Image 1 (cartoon, rainbow, N blue to C red):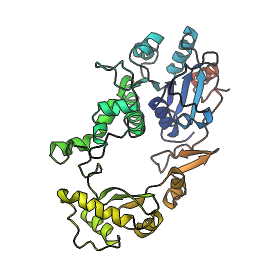
Image 2: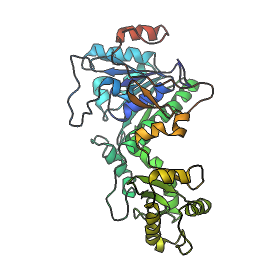
Image 3: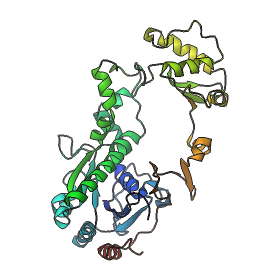
Image 4: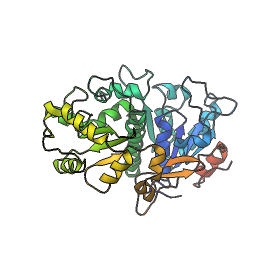
Length: 378
């Protein structure tokens, strides 16, 4: 056991997207996380978007044990409640009302353990007209207003993979809320219900932009602002070899450093902040960048304050000297694991490990937790 959350016990009802990620974040930090899954005789209902991952490749379940329980059987529900009695956290990601119908709603769970943190992680939250509506990352990011801003001028919004809704606004914000509630419960002795909605989390992430909008410093027209690809000094550019570099030369000093190494005469170039001239400035920068390969630009700008970096693939990122020194990624059994973050000086997180493919016995786990010890035996 290691990590700042060592000793914290978490029960998770198996789910998709941000729910496993929340469990992984807590497990990375040392929490003892178990995931209630369907038994082998009750396979998961086939879904159109099933990712088909084998257990050892489902990295969002690293550090998490699976305990097969049949939630359609009262005995399975009772097993989960027995685990809850010795747990600090209970997490579910069903639509509102589903956990209640299973006999695992907040009222029942908190009655069995008044000090438990009951976290509900959904797309639209527990209340509101859309609360029971299906959705995915792209929908929650769109509903928050953030997706509208993720476009170049006169182009369609671009989905940010599923990183923003599922994992940033969803799983990460939920994990933060859970830790906050656990800290409070340790002082008060009372648990509470956490309503973590992905649309809420993504909206929260736009706080700085909302301030800029209120000050008249950020327009609602996508691709016209200084950090949304509108400004030519904050964008990506194609190199001679078809690869790209990322330019983030926002501040005047950094911008001057950027220009000074382009190896072209910039005497008559437009002013950095002349928005009317941004299209012309973009053309000039693009032409200059196309004169060299990505590797050449990386060598030219490496170690400078020009805020220029190569756009790396995942494989290249694993070999980058900075990332290697910081062990940003770790190869474990052929899978590329992002290392736990953040880093701690005294209570380091767990080392990434291949997710366990074999479930553990729920009755054994109940006995060990009830006795105050660790994981159950297979």
